[in-house]
Length: 144
Image (tube, rainbow, N blue to C red; front, top):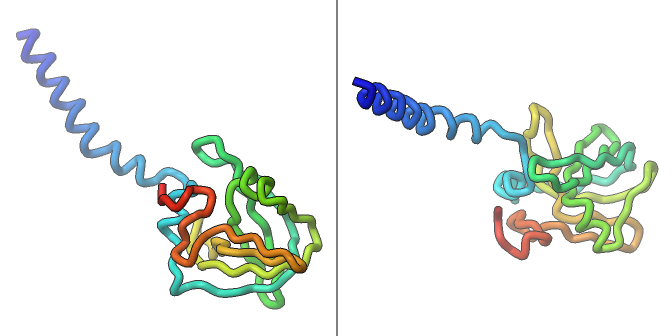
């Protein structure tokens, strides 16, 4: 009798794992790999504007990502750049008021339109973050 109870509990736990865990993991936050898969070259646009805010956002794996709020002529964009360490390695930084040009793909993240940057021009410097398909330069060419 006890063996049947243990077997029944094991079957319930296995069923729970197969049905519920994939759904829960699909609803986790956006990390660098998800953004690479969300990059759609068909939605790419170039936007010029002024940096309103610089944010460092900690991802679920502990990496720190850099996001900007970019004020264009008629719209404000949340711009996702990439890992703060990658920007630092490339000698790129941003300050409020910087005039920049961002080329990237639009995507809906967290219910709002976001620009996932492929490259950023600031003055005479250009920071390339992703290739034309959206694969991050910091990933060594691999999608995560």
